[in-house]
Amino acid sequence: MQKTATGDDGRESPTTLRAILERLRAPGGCPWDAEQTHGSLAPCLREETAEVLDAIADLTENDAESEARLCDELGDLWLQVVFHACLAAGRGAFDIHDVEAGVVEKLLRRHPHVFGGAIAENSGQVVANWQAIKRAEKQGQPEKGLLDGMPAALSSLDEAMEIGHQCAKVGFEWPDLEGVWDKVQEEINELKTEIDKKDEKGIEAEFGDLFFSLINAARLYGINPENALELTNRKFINRFNYLEQETIKKGINLKEMSLADMNEIWEEAKKHCNCKSSLKQK
Image (cartoon, rainbow, N blue to C red; front, side, top):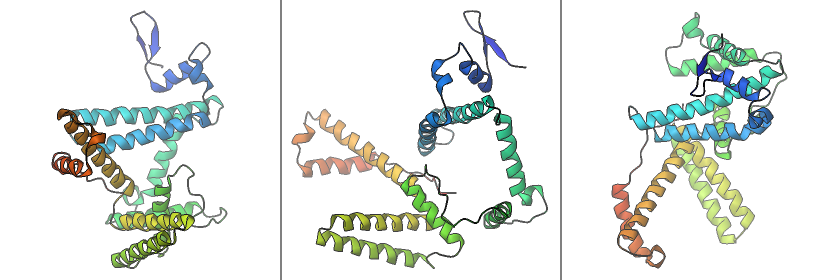
């Protein structure tokens, strides 16, 4: 039975998310919602995903405000999932119950150490079992290259991480951390060479090689570079805001300050504005 609530005007409104979306898309509902397609909603899905990640980056556990923000952003993301399922239900393809049933079945199948007789004493064994099950699921399907089928929506940074992660599965990996830092230094030297040559395309290519090496160095340390860069961006923004506020207090125009004077306040900002997180890549 569809749950409803009575508003101030006496009209009944549905209270479940699925029922609300069905009402919005029905004749006499919301013209915008009725016009949406999977394609038109894709930017919304990317935006809401980014806002969830932003809320996670800002999360302080047991802090009511940041916990509430994460809850709110997860709700917005869940809306996108239900909206896509609603579109599919409208054409008779599947509905939200099928989505849930599919992921439940997958989780049961891929956790035989919990729901079956397999053994996994640590997370490494869990991952190994998971990969073996995925390979078994794909038996009979056309063979794909290891790096084929990268999600198109991945950022270049995330794609670099995933490339390194996939290659590591077959042993194409630096033997130790010293090796990856040797590679980073090699890329720095090659970048400097291209800069000396003033070769614009060469400089661009070597910057890419350096970024790729640094991203995969982060992977080997168990660090998510997206999170690390986000934290640095926020730290810089906080410190620059402090710099601006201090100049306003002193009645100074920032554009008229010397770099030395700005650096003096910047050092103060470093003491007052810190941004740390324990977020790590799973």
